[in-house]
Amino acid sequence: MASFTLWAVRPRFSVVIPVRDRADVVGRAVAAVLAQTFANLEVVVVDRGSTDDTLGAVEAVADHRVRVISGRGTAAARSAGVEAARGRWVALLGPDDEVAPGWLARFGRLVDSTGAELATCGGEQRHLDGSLSRILPTPLDLPGAEGLRTCFRSGAFVATRRLLLEVGSFGGPDEAPRIDEVGARMVSASLAAGLPVPHTPEPLVRWNEPAPVDELPTGDSLRLRCSLQGIDALARTPIPDGALLARYAVTGGVAAVRLRQRDQARRLFRLARRLEPGEPRHWARCAAALVPPVAQRVWSGEDEDSQTTRIAQGAAR
Image (cartoon, rainbow, N blue to C red; front, side, top):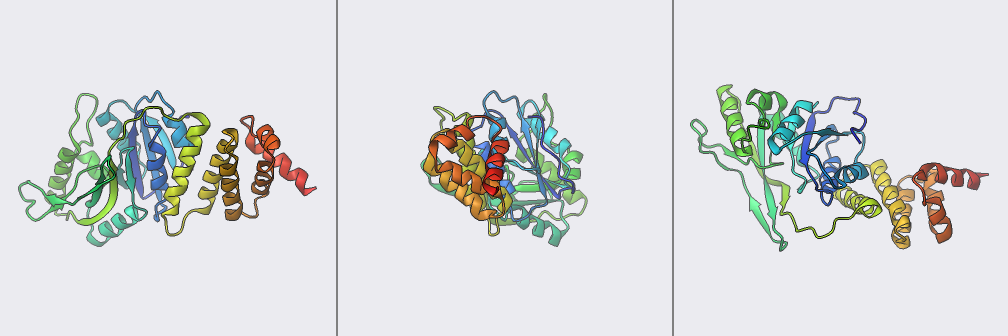
């Protein structure tokens, strides 16, 4: 999987997610971005040479706003994502991060009201024991930046692509400045241009401490897990995208049938039917899922859509 179809309209925000071997969580991060209340965005996933099913996890939740490119090394992958970004504004996320549904909308209002090219927010650190620590923007120890509060962690700032390129982005294979160092450069450039650097203390992003992974799901287990993560992310959005939610439900339902989790499959197919009652394939899937031998026969191969379409056409005759 090299890429997904580009969105026809140039996005306002590009969200860059560098990742390597994080099939367990990257689908959740991508789904949370796609569940934003602000839809004019793209996601640029920079794969750093994953050897697990990371790309399968991305594909399970992706829509036409997601692209996948290749990069090597943390700094070089971040820079590659900035170079590939099509939006005026760029945000950086880690595969373990989760963002609030209003994350980009809040940043959009903040920069629109101030004319800034850089803005930051607060967030929460989630520890392995489930506890949370609030992270607020803090004063920046930089000449001329008295009174400014910033937070330079993944997901806690947005900047124009122009500004990021002006300060050298995140470096290449032989240079790896920390995010806070790049942030300091952007603050200095903004102040030199007479631009404000606004912030909001709102916790718009959550940084999840990576949990130890004993055995990662693959194949249909991974597709089911990612679909459920996508549904969960969309459920937190005030007005979820029904078509995207239905696609997650179908992807998860097919995976559940193949895993012989029939009750889960029926729940997911019924969800898709409620979301898109005029789609005959959803009704056909629900009917097939009620009869285990039929379900296993229909979804034993890869070309699920064509088989389900034939069932739907037969039922209509």
